[in-house]
Image 1 (cartoon, rainbow, N blue to C red):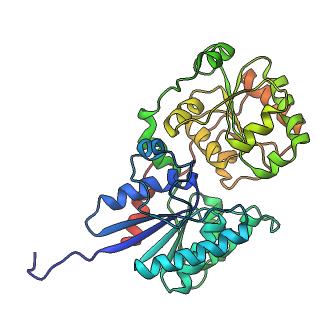
Image 2 (tube, rainbow, N blue to C red; image 1 turned 90 degrees about the vertical axis):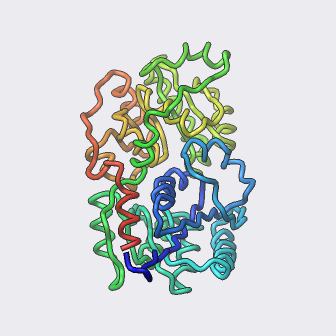
Image 3 (cartoon, rainbow, N blue to C red; image 1 turned 180 degrees about the vertical axis):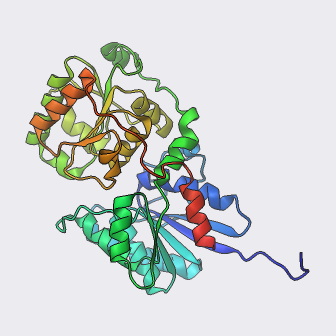
Length: 367
């Protein structure tokens, strides 16, 4: 080794806008921390005391808490955008970085992307090329802006790669790196743990025996807001389940709304990441409005019904275990009937769900 040889260190800033982002970036944080030529600066757009960031989340994911918090706490998308832009601009004044990596399609993600490019810093978008093709959706606008600005477009599947490649700018590059959520699932697969539920809950669902229950999750605001249609859907699901317990770990607004509907769904408190992973991996089926949960179901080979008309990861439908029913109670009833009667379609793992996505991304960023 020459006497004047030295390692050139790159500072990689990762911006997480909400709790689910940490599940996706944890493999990247570990991959960067394991190198001598890179340093990871992990930034969270929200507050340090955000109640959704329980300490068990970071313990379960085997990653450190963010070093930096922008402190933005708002439900207004425009306010989030403006406040994150101001706070992240100040952050970059104090912390020069070589590249900023943003995740998914939140307002905070778009805000960080805009600031990054205005400062002439290289921008990477994790889970690029996802589209609903509905310009009336705020997240669709976020996706279009972030992808248009990004130097590195990291895609998860064939469909999103095609979209990103068609839309990329002259100076950007598209890389199909695979689904980074699979890195996290593979890393934690042997660490999943059975939830310890209260006796009164267990008495109503006859314990959690593998494939003896369904799991229901609910987060999408539009779905929660239309209480009349949501009630129709939940009653249809319970009817089709035919007495098979439906277990629902619900947070805040979703829990309050479902509790008022007089429907036979067993609501439980939110679970830790490893407990929730065990619950869904061992279920007979999953009913969800979450793309991440649908991806996990495909990885586990568990039948999944998504309460939406589209999915960011079409491969969960074309190759995996996922079926879309929109917000149609009759369609939901029919698919739950198939789920509990064992009539589900055959499924497989999509391409590049191999657990090496973070490795590919870090190699590209440092090359």
